[in-house]
Picture 1 (cartoon, rainbow, N blue to C red):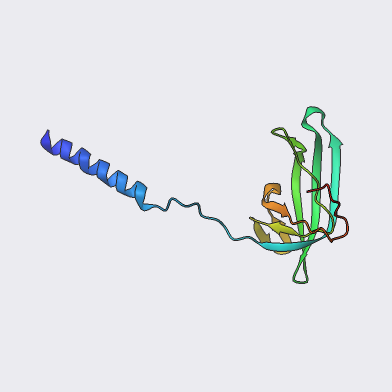
Picture 2: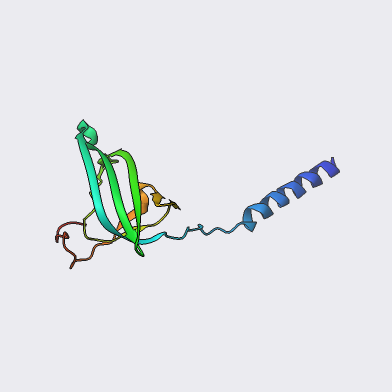
Length: 127
């Protein structure tokens, strides 16, 4: 019985050491960078309480190379918050995703609009 209790204690210590050996900080992936929004296509269809069902296609440009970014259809009212369209003329940052040829694969939540007040198409009330 003494050997068995020692074995259990050793297993517990080993388990605790493996839990603390890993870093507690969240690993952040590198941003794909800042892109210029050259073309923006948005199709909306009424969907009742869910707001509108939206499909978006963006043509982005970075360092002279053109990329296509298409989002799957989503609803504009998600968890009580409204999803706003992108502001034409303002740059976008793709926080996470992959570049495959001339296509960017990313989720809508990973694309952030960087507003510039002096750019055309930007109005004071929008964010």
